Amino acid sequence: MGAGLDTKQKIIEVAESLFAEKGFKDTSLRAITSQANVNLASVNYHFGDKKTLIRAVLDRYLEEFMPLLDRELESLDLRSQVTMTDVFYALKSPLTNLDKEFNRGASRFLLLVGRGYSDVQGHLRWFITTRYGHVLDRFTQAVIQANPNLDKEKLFWRLHFTLGTCVFTMASSEALLDIANSEFEINTDVEAMFDQIVPFLAAGMCAD
Amino acid sequence: MGAGLDTKQKIIEVAESLFAEKGFKDTSLRAITSQANVNLASVNYHFGDKKTLIRAVLDRYLEEFMPLLDRELESLDLRSQVTMTDVFYALKSPLTNLDKEFNRGASRFLLLVGRGYSDVQGHLRWFITTRYGHVLDRFTQAVIQANPNLDKEKLFWRLHFTLGTCVFTMASSEALLDIANSEFEINTDVEAMFDQIVPFLAAGMCAD
DNA sequence: GTCTATATTAAGATAGAC
DNA sequence: GTCTATCTTAATATAGAC
Image 1: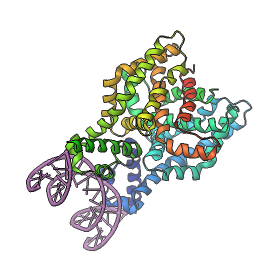
Image 2 (image 1 turned 90 degrees about the vertical axis):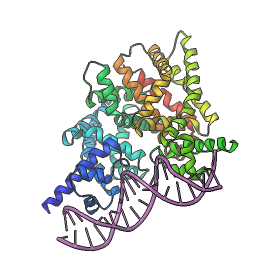
Image 3 (image 1 turned 180 degrees about the horizontal axis):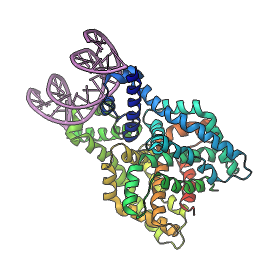
């Protein structure tokens, strides 16, 4: 049974890596089990089916990420002046923390969220919003605090534009970073990418 | 042979609809041919293989869209003062024109472009940039004209952020419009969505 | 818990009659 | 050009021995 935990762990780690790289649909259980050096049948034994495995992988990230984001937003709350840039930078340390905990965690996490939005329609989105709705609400409140002029409609759209920017950028991050690194002299990584995104999003969120 | 053209046409139209809805990978030739009421083998007869069908579908949009965008940008060129908002609004009439030519053309087009970026790795992106590179260059020039302070790196990233925003928004447009219409009193459609996007992107592109 | 073997389903593609 | 029938491949999933 010691070996059992190992197997489950190995599966989840390889799955996470392949899901982020190729998406849920394009990652077969065969690819996962063969790369993890475990038997094909063990996925079904440990997780029941592929859908549950996907949720388990995403959940590992969410449980790490969401409480940290919540704390960051809480400490923002205490300040009197909050700029939009502050709000978006609240995402940075929870994200970079993922990079420490998991291999290339930050980009993989956003990728998984994005894939969850499009790949498997609905069920992951539902999972995230019902379980972590309070953190998302808190983020929304922080945005409003930073720009009280936003009416409900603008707020709605711009939050989704923001999500779209992050998700698409992460989904194409490998290709984009390759191009960037060959095109410009400086070395570009996920963190540099993040620093590029923040002013873009903050300005968009504050547009009149 | 009259029937032959009909078949080819029917295939391409159903394919376009299904590709936009579910993505390339999740749309089987069986689904296409059965919904188009044609024989399964006819796809291979008329297009050779699935990859070629995908390109044909996308190409129909590009050939309509790109020349129009080119003309819009050309007329922008002649002005002395060009704002970033002007540049993004240059996309509007080519896009809304797609809505007239094809059923829900604007959102489908952007969806297909987005899918081309992620779904099938590389080959569609290559196809677009090599065939319509001059139009894309012209767009880039217009952006620079509107904000000459952009260095090459910022420009690169922000153009991709822009693409990401559009693609993701369109990919989730059905769900988003549903929520928007139930949440707010006003009636929201793709054009209203576009009017929400432009100031967001323009501000982001002009951030310091 | 793990393995082999296999059931089942669905995909893309093609051969060959009409 | 179109159709039926079929090949090939690859996926998820499970049964049953160990």
